[in-house]
Image (cartoon, rainbow over all chains, first blue to last red; front, side, top):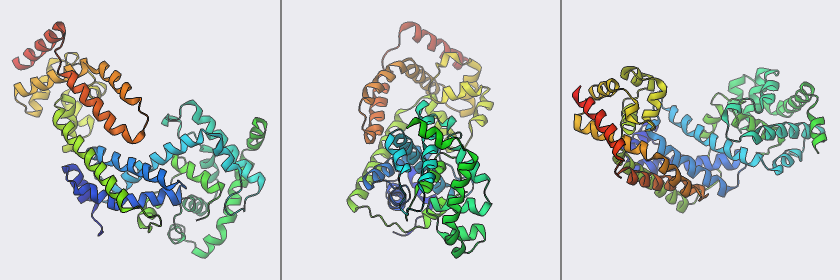
Length: 216
Length: 198
């Protein structure tokens, strides 16, 4: 399908024109299902249901949407709704013990040591505890996982960008243009920067693992 | 792409808003070629679902001739922010938000504000009175709406949420057509007379 301009899709949806739905599904269904499956590791059925919810929200709230800066506003708005839905699902899943166990086991590339995994699991446990108050309370959302943001702040700018972007599967080529480093350099340093991040997390918060061990 | 615990933790931080990517992720998502295929059947099913939701919305909009619905519609059409409207009406932010969501009984708002609103929106008296009357009915019967909604909400199926809400809203509007008690009716008629007198 030829790429339809965002403004046209929005106009069609606001006018109640059915082709707006076809265009919206054509542009976003495949893209968002792909993101949910490949980036956020959702099962395809769950991903399809989530994307269906996202697009339904877009149609229902289209009258609240306005272009402010440019054409990309609509994409940013859809992605925000998508992100919020994935977050709600993550919060829901985080309330189960299985999530901490998942963070406590070896990663796909097996480069993390047992002690490093324990640190990550401890952070996730803290997050899980904060959710138990009220999972839908967005006011405390900033406080959740602040520890991660604080640790990133203490790293070099390019390291921060590399970690954040690679976690979300942003291509090395894009990261290279943001950081001024070469793709080769970034690929080589990615694993090292991860190690540095965990080391800083552990050093900055020495009580983390003990807390988790005590709970076990 | 292979993912480890650090990536998953950073993702969680991103989803919770603790970590930002300055739209780098959103831009990357737009450029990526999907590697997961969605069947044509599912694509059509979703399209039908959205068209149905769009149709339901249109029905609701026509039905929703209350002051709240009118203010929401005008604000959306003219891209106005709430302060731009409530400052002109001489209303407080709280009162305006309640009014826009049909959550405040019209007699609780001063006659001057109603007159100002009618002049500003340039609506004939009869039409305006009917909208105020409808708003009053809607607010009066709203507790019943909550009961109705709770009954529908018993169905936990997420996919049915939208149609559930639609059914509950339809029931509320049906209830809002019921006669008001005599004292409530007197209150609203007194208000409408005062508005028309201005």
